[in-house]
Image (cartoon, rainbow, N blue to C red; front, side):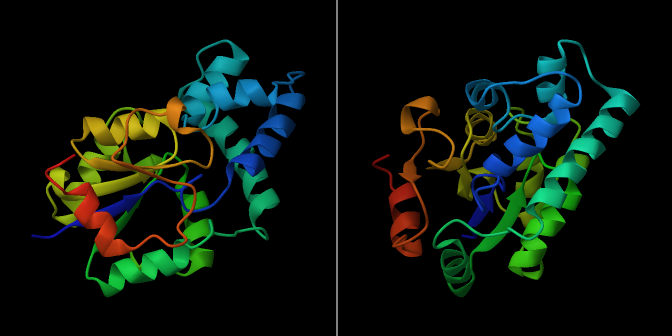
Length: 221
């Protein structure tokens, strides 16, 4: 039976959230707004740009305006992050062990495709992913399960045979709503701030692929 591992990107493959915070601080400062880090933790991490901008600008941001503002903010992020791409400890070794064990892999992010291409392109794993999905590939964002349901279709694997690595409340909820198992990555939140996951990690060091698969697909869960 084929099994697949699907990764969110921000906070799961790389610790990008601090750099998104800097980009958003610059973006909002231009508009006379100065959100606190606590406000970002509540209303930025794991959220879509539509939600973030609508929340902090206190009005609905959509359509062409959203596209223009999103391009401005994400361009800022890429400028800040382009020479700082660095995976979470142990990620690349864990990813290689997934491929060595014949597991299908995908990435499913709420970030724009340009961000995805910057990050997984620099990490050299684009060609090793059987499914790649960014914000442009869906009409509904997390916590809606669309991105994970479509990822499973791309991979040709039933949702119940997919394991998702997520770090945010909305991301874990999306994966759960898709009927998938979830590993909570505690890079942005503590365990108690996420929906219940099958397993939790702080990084990928010492994470054994086969032990993880057996644990997650155990009937004892």
